[in-house]
Length: 212
Image (cartoon, rainbow, N blue to C red; front, top):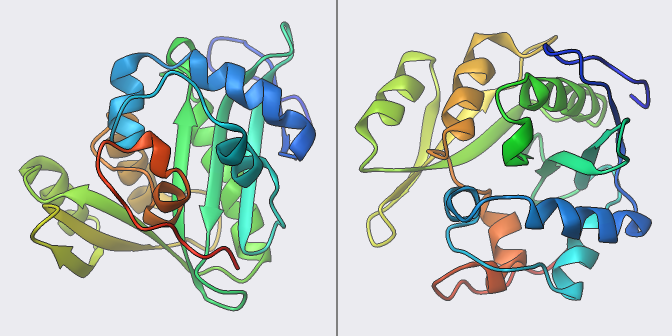
């Protein structure tokens, strides 16, 4: 991490852990998302992130909450973020999210971010990821069943199902690659704890989480 990997089209990025100093870049990257991308990834539209949102998203400890940002070497702009949030310090499971600005999608950046995040997750003792999926999205539900994802819970009122995917010993593995494709198409929502911390992004009330 911290090198300058090349994407499929030859674009060069730097990937590193976010810090509070990255808040302006993160806010700018958020504004590069189309309304459709915001709706798909954050369950509701918003013009910009608040100072509270940015503090939560950039003040990470690397163990309970990790966030890796991708920066375009040519312009210095933030173009993607991958993060995990675990429920407690020693939990072997974490919720995962990957967001890439619209102009950088379908270049392999999401895969690269998730590969880097997986390395960090394994180093911190995380064994499994969870994700929320719309129960009405039959294609993605079927995909998750095919790759061996385990159902953790279902919320009939929200119409969502929570799935768990095992973190492979190395790389992405077929399960996470399939899940990443679903996430890239907006069919897997933002993790619940991240969503709770970003209540102003949602078009419905979600009780705020207590930050560990």
